[in-house]
Length: 192
Image (cartoon, rainbow, N blue to C red; front, side, top):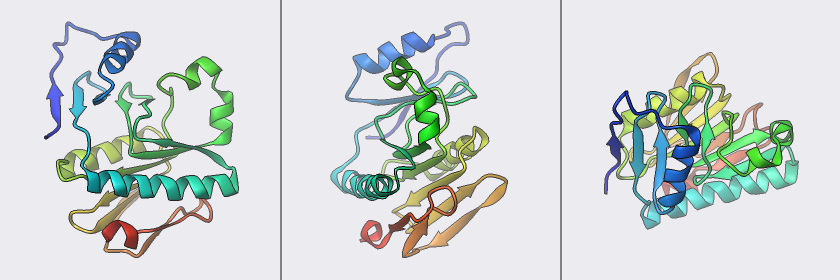
């Protein structure tokens, strides 16, 4: 299956509540909304991508439990970015202070913020350019560090605030730098 983009006429403006209701009524689908209002429907991943994504979230979660610096989210979490887009990165992290400032009702809905750290894992059905555009969107909306893991080409693209992206060929690991101090993701498990 491939990703589908539904064009919404400019005269139709979905409210945040209506978009949330669409997502709730279609729980088997991952649905994102662009800043211009297009709905992007992503199919479920295959086993290989699901395994790699799970491994990434486990490693990120273990690091976070040890450091207690923030909150980790999986690919089913929706974030409303400052530009109005609703995105669901494959893995995300925010500092604990951001989480604790959200009222409980906001913690249970799409989070009205941009994660400080995101990971997108390219699956076989993903085009590279749309993922690169999404990574740039995260950076423009406040993400401090982002990794695009391109399994197909065995590349890691690193996105940082105010710096051109860095592309590494088959790196053995990735560092959380000063955003996630002490995190080192073993990419050998991903490249397999």
